[in-house]
Length: 146
Image (cartoon, rainbow, N blue to C red; front, side, top):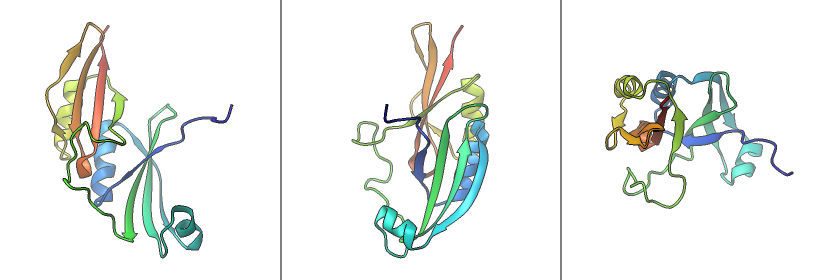
């Protein structure tokens, strides 16, 4: 088998501290923060003069991690339109299982989170919703029903 595990998902943001606060409110824990720069890093991703900062956020007691990245050099580019519709090709969203979906949505609103549609019910299994977070990142929330 070639894959051992999925290590992380990277999200590029402009305001790193706001993104950290948003995902911390969701329940993730900061694992580390580092400057990434130098020839080795630039050669790795194809940017000469790369200078960035990353924060690793992890799911408590779980294997999931997010790498939040802010590019200083070269500066990040924004897609057009800035907030892409859910049917845009490429990465769609990151989804988290939560215990109390309505409480989580309310807490994320204090950090700029916006409910995309409404909290919906999938059969007798889940309550689901999408929340737009920092930089327009689409976050799915799922509360399993008993």
